[in-house]
Structure formats: C-alpha cells, structure tokens
Length: 261
Length: 303
Image (cartoon, rainbow over all chains, first blue to last red; front, side):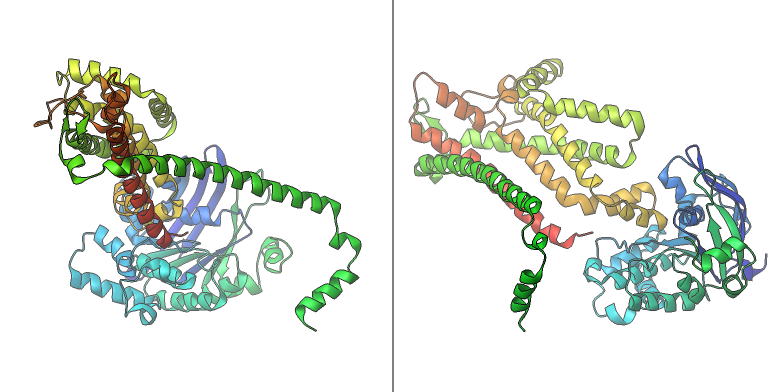
C-alpha cells in the first residue's frame, strides 16, 4: 500500500439499522487521507450516524447494525479480527459539546496515552506539550497544567478535547459539529487548528454550517433523507468548491441555496 | 428621561391588558399561595427537627462527661456510663462498612454500567423489595442464617452481617443513582479514546460519582448504627463487658437506650437522655460533615 493512503477510508454500500428501522443506506464514499471531508445535510439525515460508524461508536449504543464495508488502511473495521477499542485509538473523536473529564488539563490529555500503557513522565509531558500546541491551547494553559478542565472556557475546553483526542496519535479525527456550542472566535481558532492538523491526520467533520464546510474542507459529502419512510442516502460527494459552485444534483443545489433544510 | 420614569410613562400609555390582566393576576395569587404552602411545609419540618434535637440536647447535655463515655454502666444502670455500648456500636458500623461497602458499591456499578434488559429490571425490583423489608424480619433472617446456620451464634459478627443486609439496598441504590446522574458524553469521551468499558468505569465514571456514592454509603451506615431490631436476636447484650472478639455478644447504643427506657426499675433519666444524645450526636456530626464535604465537591462539577 502507498504510504500516503494511510488514514484513508473506503466505504462500500454502508447501511445502518437501529433495531428494525434503517437509518442510512447505500453510502459508498472514499475519504482521502490527510484531507478534510465535510458531511453536510439537514438535521436527521444520518451524518452523525455515519460518522459513528468510522470508530464503531455505534457498537456502544446497542441494537445498531452496520452493513456494507468500511475499509481503513486495507482492513475492514467491522471484521471480527478488529478490536473496536484498538480502532478508537487510531480514529479519535471530538464531540458536539465539549466533554472534558472532571480532572486536570494534564490528566485529561494523558488518559488516552495511559490507556496505551505509556507511563513514563517524560514521555507523557512531551505528549501533553505537543498536543496542546497542535490544538492551539498551549500558550493559554502551559503555566498551569494542573488546572481543573472545568475552569476553562467552552472554547478552551473544546480545544482541550481536540488535544486529548490527538494524544493517542490517531490517523483520523472525527468531529461531530465541534463548533456548534462555541462563539465565533473559538470557532475560528478551531478551524485554524484543523487547517494545520490535516497535514498529519485525516479529518471528517459533520457540520450544520455550510460556510464552515466551505471554509475548512477539501471534499464535501451531502446526505439527505427524502422522507421519513426511507433511510438517508448520500446524494453527492465532490471537491468542496465544486459542490458549492456547480453541484451536479438538483437536490444538492436546492439545499445549498437555502431552499430547504 | 430616567429609566424608571420612562417605564412609568409606558405603563400609562400601555393598553389596559398590559397593566391589569385578570388571568395573570389570578396566576400571581397561585404563585403566592404555592410559596406559602411549600415554605410552610419547610418550616414545619425544620421545627420538628430543631425541637427533637434541641430537646435531646437540653435533657442530655448535663450527663455528658468523659466519665460517661469511658466507663461501663453501674448499679443496675442507675449510675456509670455507656462505654461497652458505644464501643459495640462503633464495631457494628465498622463491620457493616467492611462487608456492605465493597459488595454494595460493586453491585451498584454493575447495575448502572453493565446490566441490561430483563435481568437488570429483575434485580432492581428485588433490591427495592429488600429496602422495603421491615428490619425485624432481617433480625429473624440473621438469627436463622448467621447465628444458627453458619454457627456464629450471638456475636458481633452475626450482628454485623445482619446489619449488612439492612444496609446493602441503600448503598446499592445510592451508587446506582450517583452513576446514572453522570452525562452519557462522559462515558462516550472515554470510550472514544480507546478505553474499555471497565477502564471507563473505574477511571472516569466512579471517581466522578464518588461524592454521591460516599454520601449514600454513609447515610446507609448511619442507619445501621441506629437500628435495634436486626441485632435483637443476633447478639446484642442487655449487659456485657466490652467485647474482646468478634465472636462475642456486645452491647449497642440503640438497644441500650431501649432497655433503659422500658425497664420496670427506671434508671436515672439523665443517663437515658445522655445515651440518646451520644447516639444522635454521633450520627448528626457524621451526616453534617458529609453534607458539607459534598457541597464543596459539587461546586467543581457542573455540566
């Protein structure tokens, strides 16, 4: 395999079923390594559901079946040989609302590495510094890493969550509307962070803001659930600029021009 | 124009409905009534507590002395102190803690974090029933199970195990509730970092819920300290010197209080009140301390 492909996802006819109800069907999608892929679409169109397939967080919700194939670095992540716990150290996630652990900044970041068995203080210190710098939080907090994470502002907490997710050195970062609970300045900081991060990790971001998708992503996928009776589908995927200027599907055009959704 | 003045002008200019709306006026009456009723209930409860504690304090404070808590009863309990009963109660609380805390907290963790579906529901109903069983039934059960079947006869050990049964449902429920209150996102954050469910539970969920778990557990233990019925058949002594081993019977404060108050030959009342004060005081101090500690911890935890 070519090294530049490490961290790329290939989805083949992926479907997700909650109990008996099919939520998402027939998604075939290539997510290139070290680029930003945005998932857009109206509420309830399965963006987050699809995102959760990529680190198998759906497993934790119970009663969820994922069909089709999801291939990361040549391996089907749903095959029995793959340990979802190990997978998640390679595919990190940042949630919609900042959710730091109720402990210090330092302990938040070292939680992941400690899970991987890293115990040496020097090594952990280096990880903390490196990830905080990459998440653009180092300058604000380096004087007091023992500070409780809950004393940080919402935007700082979300950047801490990004640093925490980077601490296991994942190949891919999943971001589920990471800025929806944040003010514009914090949003800007996180978008700048993403721009720098994509040199090293693949980013898949779910966003409700089309402006954000057009600002941060290289590729955009538009999903839509056309009626409550049928599952959501992938309507169109292409380079972001192309999708927003010359969409090939009339439904995409209707959505991005604000005619619904 | 000042703001107050402008508001007044506005009020004058406003249509009638904005100033006096009969329906809204009605709602305000209900608001006032609700405040009076709920506030009144609070005052009633507080008065009862203050009266009970105050009266015990008033009647008992005179007999408190180092001698009172450091000597055994004398002259058919008309003189002397309460040492063997105090030590006995402390032993019972310690034994109950040793048995009930690990089992109770582990069960609560299992119910909240791992149990699913029917089995979980069944266990929960069983535990709710366990909490509803009158404590004298536990006394009979303890006598049959620990004193006779297991051969512990009448001893501190048999009493401790019986009180464990009384306390377990309280600790299990408190633990489960404390864990359930935590947001789902906390667990998801940990799982998404590649932590197993157990690591998530042990490193993140339990430490975060610790104040709640500890509070519930202490409340359960303080209930055990005040119970009489469960120890009645399993080893509490009318009069005995301080127990030298777990296999001996022992006196205990609640039972000591009970027999002193019901004996045909009444002991001096100040001894009875003094005993009550020691028992209530001990539990109040523990409970108040825990409540204070918890409110401090809580300030840091907000979601």
